[in-house]
Amino acid sequence: EIPFITIQLPVYNELYVMERLLNNIVNIEYPKDKLEIQVLDDSTDESVISTAKQIERLQKTGIDIKHIQRENRIGFKAGALKEGLEKAKGEFIAIFDADFLPEKDWLLKTVPYFKNPEIGVVQTRWGHINRNYSTLTKIQAFALDAHFTLEQVGRNSQGHFINFNGTAGIWRKECIYDAGNWEGDTLTEDLDLSYRAQLKKWKFKYLENVVTPAELPVIISAARSQQFRWNKGGAENFQKMLKKIITSNTISFKTKIH
Image 1 (cartoon, one colour):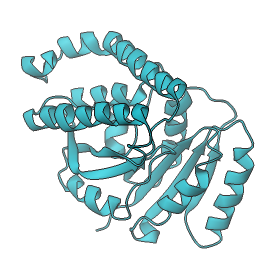
Image 2 (tube, one colour):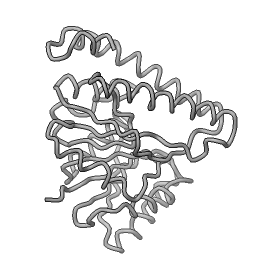
Image 3 (tube, helix red, strand yellow):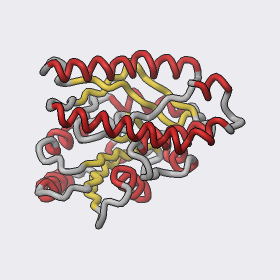
Image 4 (tube, one colour):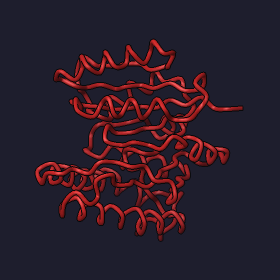
């Protein structure tokens, strides 16, 4: 039986990329009666109006797409994902940030891995649409490639913890709930939920050969802001999860060290 899929698109003031994002997502190959799209829109600018118009246009073509807005931004991205999850019809939840453009066959390449009931997440490798735009984008692409090709591949092959990278991956809904759902008390809610899920003995699958193209930040301030969030979020998760990992009886000493 073909499982129902929910695609979540958490967005915040993405005026200039929304049309590209939506046009890409609605062309993903999957039975339309088994697919819904949630635009989790926390925007505070004029993009809200243009996004609403684009969604209305798509709805008229028969696409199951919903525009979900909140009265506040409690929990930021984690809060938006959590609210969307409560309304999601899908057994599996795919998540894409606004600057990601998955290939048409993305779901066809990822969903089959969930035939293994132990798999909680399937994560794909990030690609870089504008890798050669500047020295800055080349450096970012190199660093991200090292993370995915060396760290994610190495950890996954040895059975150590890896992390859902916040986008370009798909969760089993049951896994999210079993791990305690999204929490907004760190800047990297993806890393937080990843560790909690793996402590519950869920398995993560990393697909090196499935590439999800994305756009890298092209100005230094945006790149610095992104790195700051990742670094601070990592430190917050270290403080939050260290004791739980060290005292866990479900993971090996080697995995704890990694």
